[in-house]
Length: 277
Image 1 (cartoon, rainbow, N blue to C red):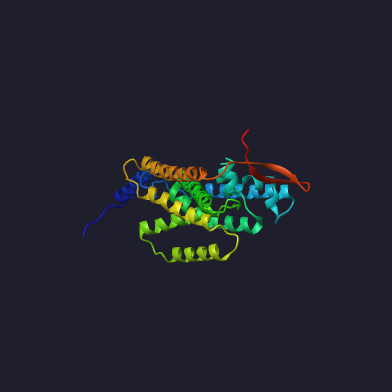
Image 2: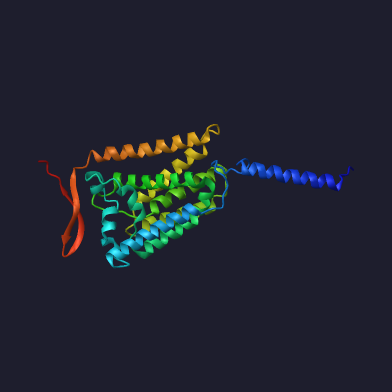
């Protein structure tokens, strides 16, 4: 049996701790599965929730109603209305709709879901990748609505992007071979709510789920060499495919002219046939 002097052990421990600090400060040995630096910050998730709540409060003030905020001008001009988006060229609705909600229960449910899921995924992906995943999922949810939903139906809410986070979680479970029990319970519960509760956009949830899974796969299975570049390329490819689908769909929709008009003393947004001069 050998022995070590106390001073030697203490010196070696100090050198090891110093080396670990140097690696950590350089970003080495502290990367997540997605290649992001490990952080306990939830600033992006908290900011997204704050923006959603702030926009909801603006619509409440405009509508002068907590439960009937859908009549607010901001709400009418920002929800995902396929006819206005595709026929009227109001492309901003693809993303503004993801920050609009119908009533306090809608915003509360989505804010809670985003807080529960977003914190862990923000740690996995880091701020930039997490934001890319979130907005790509929102884009995918809107794309599915524009492709398959009724032209005159209006859709709003952050749930499309949140379902993208759920799809991302599924890919992580598969990649790391984790216990899928919690994932399966989450999927079954959300599927039940999606199909059982009236008024929920099935296409938005499905589009967000699939897009989130695709973007996450592009990030987690990207080559280790030039990881960031390949992750960016994969995400851009998904976004371009979605944009191409929307562009194709737009060619099938007649052009309309949209705007606000007064109806019974209240501003209402509507679209009508566009006549060429």
